[in-house]
Length: 263
Image (cartoon, rainbow, N blue to C red; front, side, top):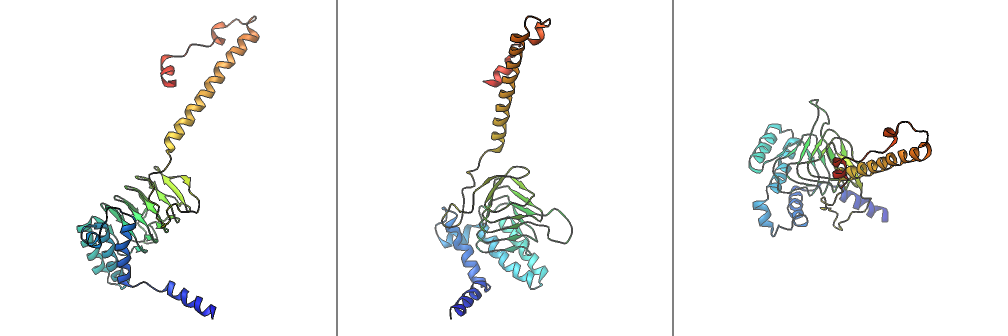
């Protein structure tokens, strides 16, 4: 009896979601990720990102039914009115939210998981002209900051955050933060999601890798300069009586430029 119930629950969980149920989730997921949303009618009438996703649901079904031309025409129509270009062949999971939705491009072989958030200017593009898997795969709960480019047949694991204007060209393991050009993994958050609803919008809370690198370099320079100033002192103390080249072993005064940098 227990096995029969569990099998029934699994079959329900794996059953394909109805078209209207997809639309319902696409609209209502906005409330959890945009505090500016006040009503369903406001979302339906003013959110171009939602419009793009809703129209993609239709064009994707046409594409899978082998109505290729009709699917491309509908996606071109959606691009004209939403400034979001989603190829009808792209596979998009549940509750995708494209915030502000300006200049977003999603390629044909892109695969997007559930509860993904994209900001304006995001590109999920390819790096080859071959007819193969050439666009990225995004896991669940992925957040991509504005202007980021994710290129190639790479995979971003679950709960990954991509910083604004980053260019990601390599696989990213789950629960990591990526920033920079090219994208570098700078923070591993662990398996626990900060937000209890499963959506982590704190993509601004990231370290500064450039500032950290400069600080490390400055610290290393200070250590080297300290060793350099200590070495002549030792030579002077040990060999001062027999030294015939005082101008060489005597430490020179620091230049004004070095003093300014040190300050």
